[in-house]
Length: 184
Image (tube, rainbow, N blue to C red; front, side, top):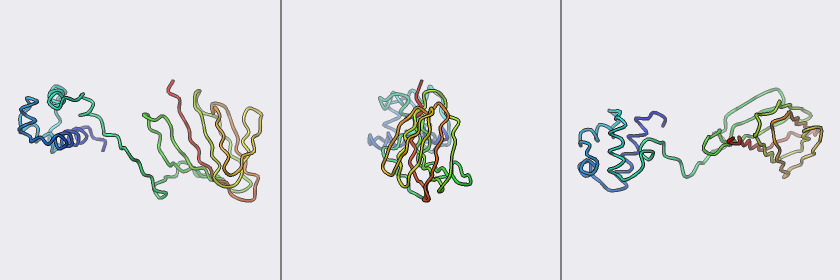
């Protein structure tokens, strides 16, 4: 749900039902007519900020409770929901959790073919990566140092510099990559 009138409509309807108010009772509390409230709830009308402020006051909530999309308390992502982020000859990246500015990170699934190499130019300053090896093994080269990582290993590193992943094994490698974008 991205359209602001849909968000407003949904939030007003939800708040009114949670408080077990009729349109008339909300109208009495907010000073907004029943017909205008009904039109807003149906999504037929996009109200002015003044009208939204009156409705928020009627509910005794901050305006943000009316105009912001409700955050999901539980997010379930099925394996089939993952999308291809990058697909190259020996390297595939799937997006498990898309970047969300409220949380500041994204979660990717990395799949590398056997005997393959992947180079990254690095991210912006302040970006931190966590790499959790799920299957196989890989060598991470970072700042001239090599780190051999095996199934179950986790490494955290500042990712604002070039780094190389190399799967020297005869088996594919699968890892979870969490990229945290520091809010500087």
